[in-house]
Length: 80
Figure (cartoon, rainbow, N blue to C red):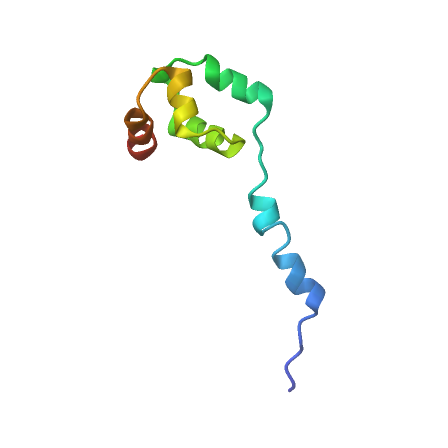
């Protein structure tokens, strides 16, 4: 018996929704950003920092905003 070829549309549908454009979408709104900035440094998680980095902030900006050192930011990303 001959093997039946799968249609190309089936192969495309199996991977629908993946890829660089779909994964790298920024899902942080300005309201979410304001909520993160209202938190004290003790309550900020590494995921919050990651979202702020996605929004375009740099470590220097975050250290000035939260009034902490850059080393503390890196340790929060690394260990929490």
